[in-house]
Length: 167
Image 1: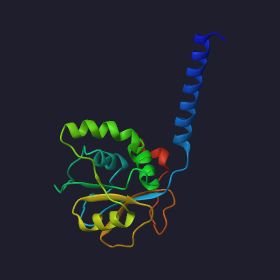
Image 2 (image 1 turned 90 degrees about the horizontal axis):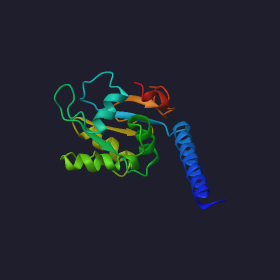
Image 3 (image 1 turned 90 degrees about the vertical axis):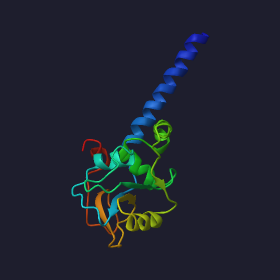
Image 4 (image 1 turned 135 degrees about the horizontal axis):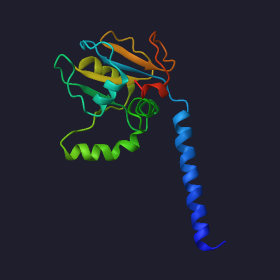
């Protein structure tokens, strides 16, 4: 094979592999999770679209005027990756450029805490807070907004991850 043909074949192979990974990543089973809010939040029927706006810092206030306080787990956490993929439509790494641009405009990304217990504690003690965890907390100071998958200890159910982008 001549050099240009080999180069073309290599590019085609790379594009094929990238498409395979992208398609298989979308259909892969994700970790179940529950989106939780502080008990005082009066919003009813918070949609995944609203949650995405809050976590992208495009909705800064709840309907009653309380500031939204989104709480993230570390980017490497499986629950964070599932939440990002299902609700935001992108993995945490893909959001890096978004946050660089937002930072330039004076907007900071959501708080990051080390554990799900920290998410529950922060959401329970912070007016306007919203986060996500892998099982429904028994804490009465938080409310479950919606779930994705079979979340342990949780009576609420949601549609599969793939359908959240349409809501």
